[in-house]
Length: 201
Image (cartoon, rainbow, N blue to C red; front, top):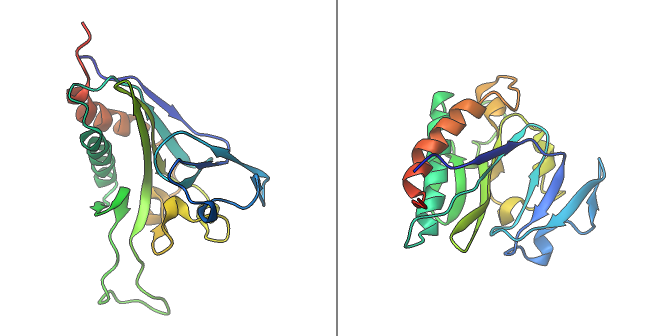
């Protein structure tokens, strides 16, 4: 089958609330200050997250092969992002029980001056829905956003309050345009997802 269509966008700032979010995990108002950022309920899995400038959001649209295996699809998305992060010299991981792609926690032995070792930090959020075999929603890769958007004073990102959020820019020390990783990410996603595409010919 041909590679699946991929929509790549950089949203204006918005908080989206998935179907699994508890009331205390979402912002208490319909807009979040500063910036008057709207809060929108969506029909994906997952909880509350932010999309906006500096984040590359990707929506794959494909009909999955039978039998439908959503976990395999999610793992393919994660594998593509792990591959992409490797191109930037970052070793990323999956975390048991938590979707998305993560930087591992720093070990206690890391030398540091005046700071604690950093916990696991999410670099890419993931929330999907599959209806009638067709995928919706997708991934949000933090390229170089203002990470204050994820602060616990505003939301509990993805319902997780004991880990951090990071970006390609923060981890590499480089200022990156949102489109910088786009071609490499598309290539990785096509490699991972094409085997999952149903043959509709």
